[in-house]
Image (tube, rainbow, N blue to C red; front, side, top):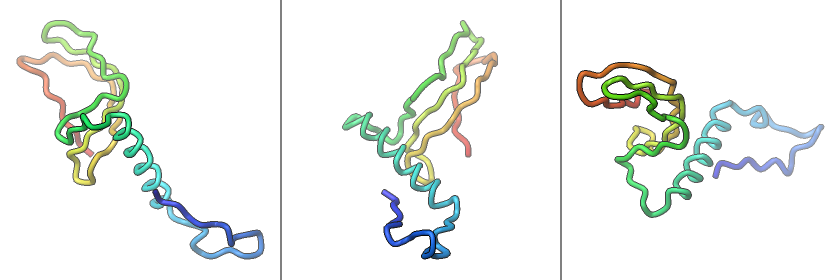
Length: 103
């Protein structure tokens, strides 16, 4: 896990590194959430599958889709497994509906 040692910093002694970029915090959060979800999925994890974490429920019928907002976990991205939030959507499909993950 990304961890910063701050034991030597106090009100009179600090370094420029103490004012870190948001990138460090983002990477630490992404790593923590990724590892948590992987732990919950366990040995059944497959990087080619999309796992619905919450929401993404279709309440439409037939060829009309009304899908609620939610979040999914997908491991086939460029940066490895990631959590993606999904907006609510409504549409009519002429065939099978297929979702696409984009950044």
